[in-house]
Every structure is written in C-alpha cells, then in structure tokens.
Amino acid sequence: MMRFKQTLMIGTMILGITSSFAITPASAATSPKIAAKAAIAVDSTTGQILYQKNTKQTLPIASISKLLTVYIVVQQIQAGKLNWTDQVKISPAVAKISQDSELTNVPLVSGRSYSVRELVNASLVVSANAAALALGQKVSGTSANFRELMQTTAKQLGIKGAKLYNAAGVTNGLAGDLKLTGVSNDAENKMSAQGVALLASQLLQEMPSITKITKKASLNFEGTSYEGHNLLLKGQSQAQPGLKVDGLKSGTSDAAGGSFVGTATKKGHRIVTVVLHAGNQSPTDPARYQQTAKLMNYVYKVFKPVTIAAGTKLKGASSAEVPNGKQNTVGLRTANAESVWIPKTGTKSSITGNLQLENNQKTLSAPVINNSVVGTAYFKVNGATPAYLPSNSSAISLTTVNSVDKANIFVRAWRAIVNWF
Image 1 (spheres, rainbow, N blue to C red):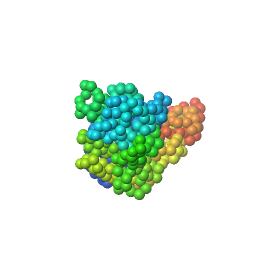
Image 2: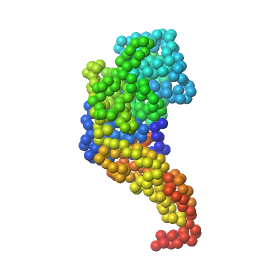
Image 3: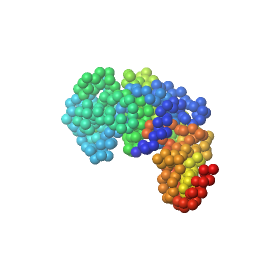
Image 4: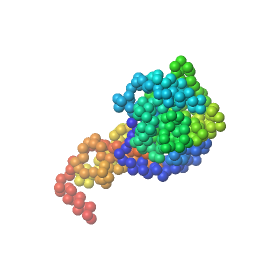
C-alpha cells in the first residue's frame, strides 16, 4: 500500500507548491520544458514529487481510465470477490463495441466467455475498449453501477475533481448501447495529473506484478498478435543507459490529445510519470513518449534517492526534553528506513528533521520506555520541505534510544525553583 500517513500536516502544506521540486532554486533552474498541458513525476512508493506542471487541473484522460478499471479488478480479487481465472460472458452490446473501427479493440464474440486475466491483458497492452467495458459489467452488473464504483474508488484514493463515465475512457457517445442516459455524448473521463499519479502509484503498490503485463510491446489474443502503443518499450525511449521502462498506459482522444502514464526503474528505484495532452498530430505521433523520456531522464540526471537507515540520529530531531526525568533529555533515532530524493550534488548531511512529538507535546513525560515510538520527524533537504502527493508526507517515526525514569520529588522541586528564577 502507498503510505497514507495519519499526520497530514506536511501533506496539506504542499497543496500550494507549484515549483518543480521544493528543495533548491538550482533544481528549478534545470527543470525541463515539458511540451504538454500537465505533467508530474513522483517516487512510486513515497509519493515524493520530483517535477510538476499544472498538476491539479482536471483534464480528459481517455484510455488512461483503464488503470482505474484494472485497479478495481485487483481490489475485487484481493477481497476474494473475483479471480483471475473467472470467466466473463460477453454481452451483445460489448461484442458490438469490440467491432467498432473507431476504437482500439480485440474482437469479442457475443455469448462467449473470456477470463478476467485475458481481458485485463487486452485492456492494458492493446487498450481494448470493449474488454474494459466487459470487466466493468463483470464487477458491477451495469455500466452505470460501475461508473459509481469508479467515482467512489477515486475519492477513496484521495483523487479530487475526477469526472468518470465508463470503464474504457471513451466518450459517452462511443459507448454505444452502454452509454449513460441523461449524459452528453461528448462526456469523457477526466482527472488531474496529480490524480493519475496517485492512481498509478497505488496500483503499483497493490500489484507490483502489473508491470509483467504493461511491459509487453505486443499481445497474442486468440491466435492473433496485436501491437501495443507504448513506444518506450520499442527502443524509442531516448532514455539514459540503465533506465528500465516497463509501463504503464497511454490515452488518446480528440479532447485528451496524446497522454501517457509511464513508470521506470533505475538501480531499484521506481518513479511514475504522467504527461497529459502532448502533441497528437497522427496515430503514430511520438510526442507523448518523447516528453516522457525527457522527464524520466531529467529525474535520474538531476536527483538521486538516498536511504536514511533505521536507527539513524537525524539532525534536528535527535533528542527530546524530559523535564521530570532523571535525565533531562532522551536520544531519538529513526524507527525504520526511508528513501528521500535529493539533488545529485547533495549528501545525506543535507537531510535534517523537524521534530513533532505525539499529541503535539512540547516535551516528554517520564517514565520513558526504551525503543518506544514517541514522535515523528519531517524531512527537510537543504532546509526546505520536499513536496509530496496528498496523503503522503516526509514523516518518519522516531523511537527512544534509552529509558528515562521519573526524577524524585526533591529533584523536580529543585528544578522548578531554578526554572522559576
């Protein structure tokens, strides 16, 4: 699961941040100009934002919507309500859409059944619209019910302002007999770049093996080979050596232009990128992939992830006062390891912590137990707070280094007298 912190102080602070990376002015100076209406790059696990441009505007996302459909399917499987081998019977309406020459598809036969796994593969690799709609019907019975589930799920993920109409991401008019009543034919799924990044990151957290599907450059379906759309899987990434691209999903429509959600790893560190509304002059226009490659290269060229090991005494959060203890202070250390991206020219010494004790206390009260969690440190890099996706923050738990017994009444009385004067 993506880390959803109970303490959202830092998460709320980043809502107004619009710079590419809230660490140093130098990083902003080297930010690339991404030729798209909106773009973002994040660490897939921590949600740390490494680049952002117009990330909160709700925009058409076309087939990127299929990531939400697959996420819901994964949730259903994890809850035991669905299985990868379950069969999905194709309705006449879905079969008819699968033959629509205006849409990307694999042909589905009315009355015939296909496995959930087959339809998920077709939805992600070939962007088969009818396959995604069939999955929606399998989960919720009707398109209208699945639309409500999509909206609810997006809200649960912390995605704000999403407008969702169907499992495939086609316009309502192109949904044929499955279109919603009382909704414009031009209505199309919309989400912000930030929302898409949240969705993609969470999908990768819930099902890391999803990249075994999304890294496929083509798909064999019912004996026929279909080409995928991700040019970054076909040697056209223009990416730096060692950068492994293995997903995730493209989206194309008149309203959405050329859009793409990418993910890549280098030396074990995964990022998610979102490019919305890049150029789309033809079906083979590589603009979205060129801009994604530029963004990925920028992240790994300018920044590096460093790990703060468990047991680290973090400058600025290495101790807490214990006024009524035998010792006046107790040492603090990080309870777990955490990764933080910093400028490539920086060192671990640039990372400090802002201490916040539990229940917003200013000090601790004795007795203090050794190795107990007593507070949180919020990372700062060169004195600045990194930006994170909503519901994520730079928080890391802190534990005590030793026990501190309560001082006797005479010591406490004497301290009170000294503090008085």
